[in-house]
Length: 365
Ligand SMILES: *Cc1c(COP(=O)(O)O)cnc(C)c1O
Image (cartoon, rainbow, N blue to C red; front, side, top):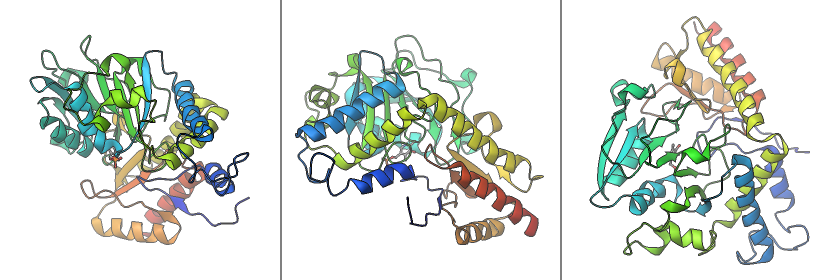
């Protein structure tokens, strides 16, 4: 039983964790059961830590139904490091990689890939301030891309792919899924590589999950620094060097809980219900609230909307903060409000925001 008062945390990342996970971590922080030492103190090569690390890997495989022929890697450097590692491993200097540009994070991924090889922007939503996902008809692949890169959820703009793009046969699809990984079932087999910084939907900062098809491992030039080569980590099962042990431990707890509560189908139903409630509050406000993303491309994870004026948005943020609804200020590139409601965000928090929105519109009309 928690006696601590927790407010509603709408942060885009690092973000809210399941209370049960925080409680278990606290309970066992000083001594892991049967070990007598903290997870913070033991060797990453000890048996207890191997159980945590390989257990987390096994949970990723079970939860996502990872097929044979894929490696699950626990790396560091965030999704940002993957912006570099993906092209360093998969893009020959003379080759071209195709990127679908749907937000700030894809723009950053593109900038890093350009340092390694050629980049073709196959489609972009920049013209409308990334309020949508490009349609299939808009996507123009290059003739033989080394891979095709997408960003499944655009954390800042609040758009999300609700289908995977049709990629030319034989071209590996690379997905930055940092802000919506495991928000619903995922068809790993349709991907060559999936990566995600852990601090939004998985665990805490410091850990990056990479799921990569084995034939894409071992393609990096020999000049590649050892840490930045996927082959290094695949060979050593993420224990080439000291991994982010506490973040892996938290991931282990989060995934164990997800598996015990119905897996990704249950998570999907939850997320769908939470997002629908919040968008209904936006759409049902008689135009007082106005969503940024086009309806079909709305994110289940980051709900972005505007008020009639910047003045009212400021007041909305200040007043909601006073009422224990934290982190609702939108990113500067969109403005307005952003409510991040990741897997671990409780439905009661959505209900509290919906009630606040109605009251705010009534008293600030
Ligand atoms: C947060 C985020 C990133 C950056 O993640 P870091 O782990 O901080 O490097 C990249 N891509 C997406 C989609 C994100 O949401």
